Length: 184
Image (tube, rainbow, N blue to C red):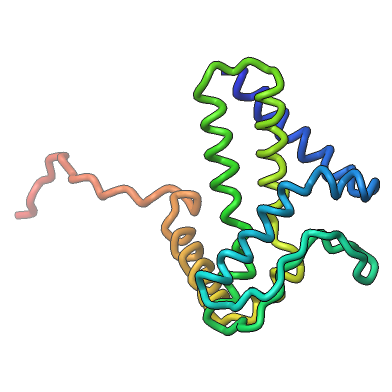
């Protein structure tokens, strides 16, 4: 059982290392290249499937304002009905990371190069699944996203209202089994 926790701790440590390495830009950009490729591929493939018209795919890091852009996909037909799904497409990397982790945990877990590579790839997939601010801005242009958000809030509110966390449920009244005397 503790082997699984060690594997999860290794993934968390890898994520922390990737986050800290942002200060060493070129090393960071090389280490996150597999994740960047996966992130941009998600945008590209969802753009093809949803008729977003991807016209270019770029993995070269470039300076933009006060930050860096690790990669990009340019579209020529982002519309209200597809921009939410294209913008948030990298979230589909989370199930891929989960599946890879489950696959590695099912076998005999011997910490060596195969597990180190799996931890590296899982951390890359998790790191790459986070949509950028540009991705969120594109997704926010869609009323579909706002409707899904409103529906999720409504569902959460309804679920919260009926949850036992609000307090104990009222108990049913007990039948009085005591003997009472009838008047007269």
